[in-house]
Every structure is written in C-alpha cells, then in structure tokens.
Length: 322
Image (cartoon, rainbow, N blue to C red; front, side):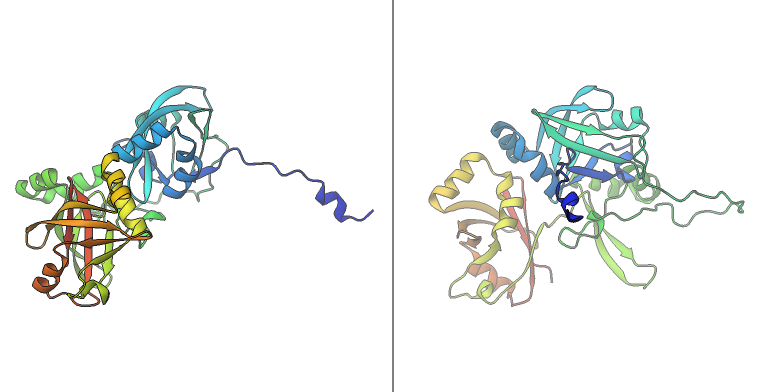
C-alpha cells in the first residue's frame, strides 16, 4: 500500500469558531467599551444567519440587539451590533465582559452565531506571546508623547482613512488645552478642524477631530462628470448603497428600485446652498442629476478634482475643496 493512502483518510473538520481576533487596546478600554470586528467577517458569519427582521432593523437603524452567550461561563446577556461603515462594534455589556474576564491586549476572542444567538469565548490558554516589559530606572521627566497607540489594520486602511483614539486620552491630553468654545463646538457638531504637524517631516495638515471619516465617498471627477452638455455625476453602486441608501427608509429604497430615480435634498457644503436633485439608479452605479450642470459651471469643475459626498440628516452633502 502506498504511503499517501494514509493521508487521504484524514477527515476534514470544520472550525466552529469562524471569527477569531487578538484583542487590541481599544477592545479592552473600559472607559469606552466596544469590541471592533471586521465588516466582512460579521456579514459573512453573523448577519447572514440573523432573521429577516433583525437584518432589516440593522439596515434601517444602524444597530440591532440580540442574545449573546459567554461559552466560557454559560452566562447570557443582551448585546448590540452597531454598524460603523467599514467595521462593526459589539456593544452593550462589553464593558462588563472586559472587567469580569480581566481581558488584556493579545488575548484571542472567538465568535460564532448559533441557534439565533451570538456565542463568544476567550480561552485563558489562548494568549498571544508578548515580550516581557523590563522596568528600568529613569529620571522623572515629562513625557512629550502622552498618547501612544499600536496601529491596527483599520488604522491603515486607505479606503476608509481615520485614526481612532481612546476617548480618555484625548480628553486628558488634547481637549484640556482647548478653549471652552472649541470644546463646545466639538460636542455639538461632533467634529472640529484642527492644524496638525508631522513631527518627522515637518509637514503641516488640516485634520478633522471626529469619531469617523466625515466623507465616506470620495471620487476624482472624470470627463463625463464635468460635461455640461449631459450633466450628471456618476457614483459607484456599492459606495452609494453602503453610505447613502443604508440610511434611507424601506419605502424610499423601494421607490428607487421601482421608479429607478428619487428626488432628494442636497447641500453644497462649500457654499451652504440648498438644492433639490435626483439620484438615478443605473444598475451597477448611480447618477446624481438635476442641478449638476449648474454646479459644474459655478464651481468650474475640471477632470481630476476630488468630490466628497456623505448622507446626513436626510440630506446629501457634497464638497469640492479648492
């Protein structure tokens, strides 16, 4: 008998934990408790098994509640899955889980959806090896870099560029130096533009202090986008569905599907002008029509200029920065 025959007899065992992740600093921060999970894993291994009602609630509200079980202890709790664009957050009782299990950076959490319930486990033996920290005597000097973070995969994703920072660290080391008017503006508007400098290169930037990328849809204008004879702006289908239609009511999405176009309110974020426009479904992409020719002429749009788009409070917001 050939030696290879023994290897062919090995059965294939399916991994019962399709989602696995080494915990990061933000995952174990009890001051702002949430577990970050990748969008692809959640939609492939969790959302697809939810009931149609749960899926619809997630699309309409941006979050959905469900039962969750700690498979290490058998404890049941009610938690929520919150959609954040390119990823999801598990919230609700996550802070309690972090405290009760004494979770630390590097520990591996495993998740699965089974019988209408989210199951998770953090086995104590599953700890990623981390080099020991040597404590050395050093003179007491002020740390010029009070906020430090190990970059995660979402931090370096060029498709959804943003850097999450711990709330407590930002409030204690950044916001404390702001004037009251700036802090109040951040609280009300959720974001404030700030000057930033790359200490390594001395380059200076203007950045937005925010919990997420304020412009999820960005596009370099093409020749057809700036043609005043046939004025329309083409937007990618997936980007529109993920960042615009996601916030629409079921009735509005049905109207778009049936009539292939829907009237919407729009605002030019650069000028504050309010417009009535239309979003037209073209199959794999969408066209923004209506006042687009007027926008091309007034802004003197040219090929290569970048347009930014988002949906906010029932209105399409767009900007073409100089």
